[in-house]
Image (cartoon, rainbow, N blue to C red):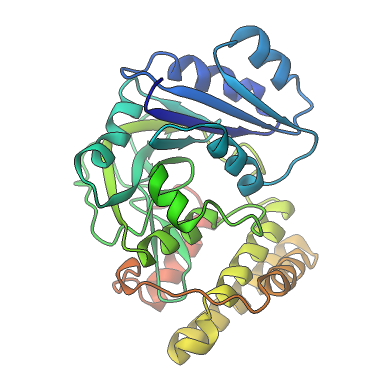
Length: 318
């Protein structure tokens, strides 16, 4: 059996999955591909059965969210290395080989970030995630020119769930993705837990995939606003940001108030408020440690605001 399991969650993304599976079938190292159909109604399951019988398919009757889809996919495999790929990522032939290389070479590495490029391959979409003192997560090197930018691992908190590799033993130690998060920030949460347990994060700049875009929820849709707001409030409460660090608490409250105000004005609804109230309630009294080496101290308040503006106005370098 291959020593790599590749897990792909998908929801009504057959048109994207066709290219994703075709390119994964041509990888330079063998891998077992596991597709998790998260309640699709576009014929995804039939397509996988008929066109890719070699792929392991898990089917759910409804959209369970990212974590509750990916976790069963991870559990369905047994390989020592687990690779996560979004259905809207076209992987280079050496993607799997390069993204698991740090796990093979360095025993202390528990997670690896792949390099996602924007269509056209002239700009970086992301190279892992970094977080500020409030645990707001940011894609690293977003918008930077490629291949002219010198990529590095400094302040890498962990990989993005769209192009990530994990050591199964590390996941068995800390647990997989937090299923109380429906979507967004599950990868940040897992990275923090792995860091707290002593596992290192590494980058694999040769593990290249082209990210075709936010094809699942749509850019800044009202669903995105509500679900993202829930994830943000959940993380603030789970990790005690508002009670552990008064300056960070003031920073977080000011930033969230601004984001909520803008989203409310743009959408003319209370999606941002509803999401944050829901996420705060869901977190309950959970308390988790914040590993200091996961935080990028170079991201100050102004820099964080600039990066948030870049998310609203895509194409700007973050």
